[in-house]
Length: 555
Picture 1: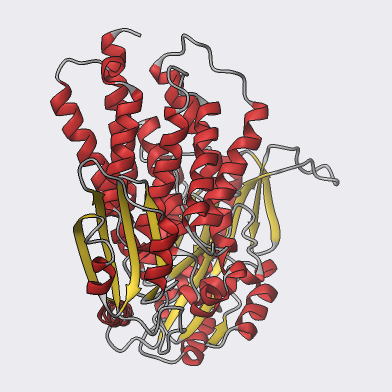
Picture 2 (picture 1 turned 30 degrees about the vertical axis):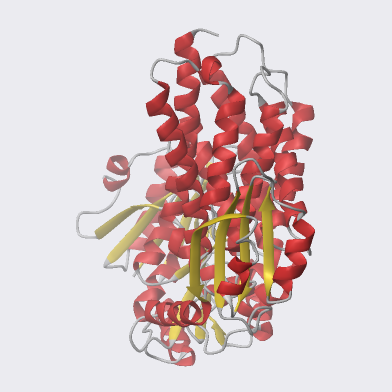
C-alpha cells in the first residue's frame, strides 16, 4: 500500500471516530435523560462521550507522534491496541465500561487478521466479536440493554453479507467507505428496532416510559460513523425523550450511594491476579460490579457506600489511578429536577403528534409538541403510541393521531397509560397543526382536547398524490395526480391542474391556505404560489411527507 494511502487510512479512522463523537455529543442530553437502569443517575450520555473522547485523544497523539510514518509502519495492531486501552482507561459507569468492551472486542478481531482488507466481512466479524466481548464482561447480562442492541445489530450485518459482492482487492478508499457505510446503515436500522423493543425486555424501562439509554447511544454512535464515511449529515435516528415523572421506579442499586470507577495497573514486572477473586470481594461491599481488562490493566466499576474499601482491595496489586466517585443520589435528584424544568414553568399538559416527514415534525416541535414518527404509512402500533405518550414530559397528554386509521390504536394506548390522556380526532397532519394553536401547557388535557376539537371544525383539508394504480372507472391512470378535499376525490390528471382545482375549492371561503410539499413533489414553490389567488394569504412549507405530493389546509 502506498505511504500516502496508509497515512490517509489513519486519518479516515480518526474522521470516523470524530463522526461518532459528534453524533453522541448532539444527543448527549437525551441519552442522559433516558438513563433509568440500573440507576436513574442520568449519566449514560456523558460516560459514552468520555469513552470515545479518550480513544480520539489517543489517536490524535499517535498521529502527531507518527510524523511521516505510514499506517503500515505504525501497524494496525499498535493502533487498535492503543485505542482499546484508551477506551478502557477512559471508561466510566456501566455504559462507558461496556462501550469500552465493545471497542476492545472489535479491536481483537482486527488485530487477529493483520493485512486483511477492512471490508464489510471484517466489519461484520468485528461487530460480532464486540457483542460477545461485551456480554462476557457482565456477570449477569440483562436483556433489553446495550448488550441486546449490539447483538441484534451484529446479527443483522452478518445476515446482510450474503447479499453483498466481495470487495475487490484494489478498492479505492472511497469505495471502501461507501460499502462499509451501506453495511453500517443496516446495523443502525436494526439497532433502532431493537431499541424500540427494549421496554418489552426490561420492565423497568416500560414502567419509566423510556427506551434503554445505552442501546440508544450505541445506535446514535453508529449513525455518526455512517455520516463520517459518507461525508454528510448521516442517517436520521428517531429521537427518544424521557418523561418528567412524579415518581421514579426503584432500581437494583437503590441501597448504594456512590458510583465508583478506577483503573489498576500492575506493578512493573508483575501481573494482576485472577479477576474472579476481585469480583467476589467487590460484590461483598456493593453491586453493579464490572471488572474488565487483562493482567496488566484493569478497569473497575462498582456501586458502593465505601469507595475507599473498593480501591483498598487493589493497593497491594498495582497502581490505582483515574479514580472517579459520583454521588448517585445527587445525580438522580439533578436528573429529576432537569426533566421537571424541561416541562416548562407550570406545565401540566403536553401534546403528542403522530407524523410522517421531517419538515412537518419540525413544525410540530416549533409549536411545542412532541412527535412520534409514524413511518411512511403513518400507522404506528399501540405500543409505539404508548411509548410516545410516556415520552411527553408532563403528567397529562393530548394525542393527535392525524389519521383515521390511527385513532383506535391511540385510544387503546390512552386507556393503557397510567396518565391522563385525551385523544383528539385529527384525521390529517395539516389539520393537527392548525389545532395546535389551541393548546396551552398550563391547562388540563380535557380542556385542551375540547379547544383543539372545536378548532378542527373550522379547518378544511385537501391533498394531492400520485395514483398508485389505474382507476377502475377510467378517470385516471397509474402515476397521474389525484386530488382530494377531505375524503372526496375532486380532480385528477396533471399535477398542476389537479393542485389548482383543490386550491380553488379550499380557498373559496378561506383567509389562509397552508401547503406542505412532500417528497418528489413535481412542482416547485414558485410554481405552486402562482396557482393561488392574490387575495388569499398563502403559507408554503417543506413538509417532507413521503406519500403525498402536497397536503393543504384552509382556515
